[in-house]
Length: 308
Image 1: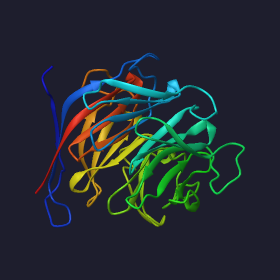
Image 2 (image 1 turned 180 degrees about the vertical axis):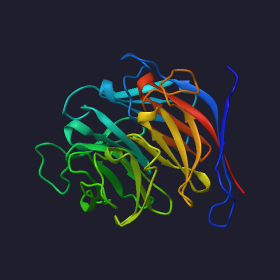
Image 3 (image 1 turned 90 degrees about the vertical axis):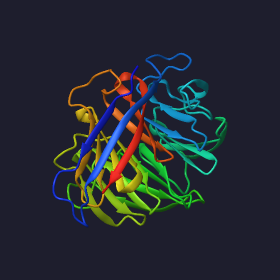
Image 4 (image 1 turned 180 degrees about the horizontal axis):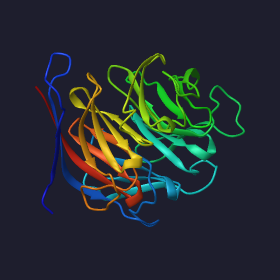
């Protein structure tokens, strides 16, 4: 299949504060298909790449984590429905910090730590567990350079920051419509500069905080419909899965403007279309993986950003 190029340019006059930005996404490949068998996915929610390019997918409908190589070939899996060690109940978020994977096990109200070979290391939280971390239903999960974790809590409409010692350092957000408030948050990502972007799904926007939970700005309030995926990209670009509009939208963080769109507004299943896109992940700033949840697959694009 021939590669396709999707481009967009920010409108308006270029300036020091808002330069002209070109964002292009070129289709590379897809992997996964609907099912519960080897290499198949069922309503997946999130993914992460390790430094070698291997992909780990939160296969939500199958209650498992699936590992693929850089070409999208199946390698291994872990999970199955349950609440015991090595089992999941609706895993919805996955991230990698150092050499460990962290999975938000939503309906079990906990997160699970795994090795890259999908061996269980630890479980933190849980329905009946007393301890330093108490969660409602976690959604997204992301890690900072310092090893801290940020989890969205959909029940309590907040973001929980967990230290490297597996204790809650702080929480922020809280139910509401105003600045710094969020409703039913899902995905989260942390930039190298420690900005925390949260999909404020119930308010149809993305909210950006600093690492301490101080409100910085909101994006996409007149553009997005129930976003459920977010990833900081190269050169000051933020990618958002505009889930309700079945597309991926690129924002220039400096100006807050839309600088690219791919897919939408209706669902589709060709390589340039999506059905309910959710999790996003970048590999070395030039490959963007998109969890195309309604199509039960992952779509990978080449990323090109030109800032003039």
